Length: 352
Ligand code: NAP
Ligand code: ZN
Image 1 (cartoon, rainbow, N blue to C red):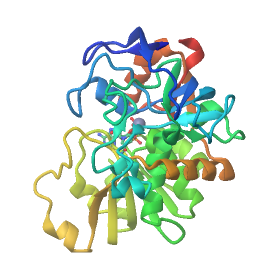
Image 2: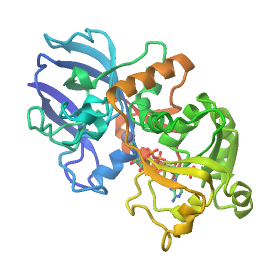
Image 3: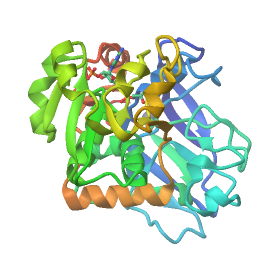
Image 4: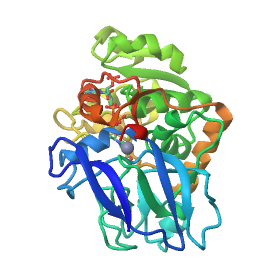
């Protein structure tokens, strides 16, 4: 077994603290990565706090993992020692269902194995532990190559925030001629802005935080709208083709649906604990009046994650990050909850 150092919550709601654990030996189809950086996702906090479902503890969060390959299994062809590699939100799937065969492992019919807070039911049947740790052993088929020309720490968030916003933009073929609103300017939101701009869309940020306006232009957005300002909202009513909704808190979908134009699509990637809250009934006319839809999207498949990284290498896209010591993880969570984020925290694993 491989002795591993990490930060774990021993129980739901606990403060994370140093914890030593074991990872499996490198199997024939595995690679071992020395983790150099790991991004901090709102999902990490949600899962420590059992917001989605009762979690498995001890829990080592982290699914925005980048580092160097230090060992490869005998049958591994795609990676060699010294390569940069990344791991995102999933580490295994059945591999046989039609969704897996299409490269949509995230929608595996038998259920995916998350990078942490899950059991590797297609592997060793042990709990999975995430990237707030010094090393990870994973199947080569679930690792991706990190382009060498991108800043490594700023690349970590692409493994979740990046692919989770890139995937729906590609699926709904969003690009030139589309008016896209990005709801919530946090980790996912700022990546959605960068991708939508690179794909040629006209991008509006819908934010609750006036102080973020100064960054909107720098991120490439064309417009910035404060959602609490009725005057600003009136001007964008019925105007968007797509809303990419990254909000983790309770919010009123009827209100945002009113901002969509004909055939407009409200794409949920954020996970509010309260679910889809409609502040009363969803007026049927909110949808049928202009043939609108509400849809959802989860992270992305492995091939699409590689495609996204290559797209980033080509367009010079990385996340805007604040690099933190792992001991400061809880102040980072506190700031994230207040929306005080610019725009992703990344843990420097050298501080572990
Ligand atoms: P984050 O960095 O905290 O960003 C969320 C942003 O939402 C905040 O910065 C804030 O932006 C806005 N916001 C907060 N409270 C709000 C409210 N009450 N009403 C309207 N807007 C509000 O979080 P993140 O890491 O980007 O994650 C966002 C969500 O996506 C989380 O629920 C996470 O679990 C989920 N997620 C889903 C997937 C997936 O596969 N679908 C993958 C990763 C994460 P402003 O200050 O601009 O308002
Ligand atoms: Zn995430």
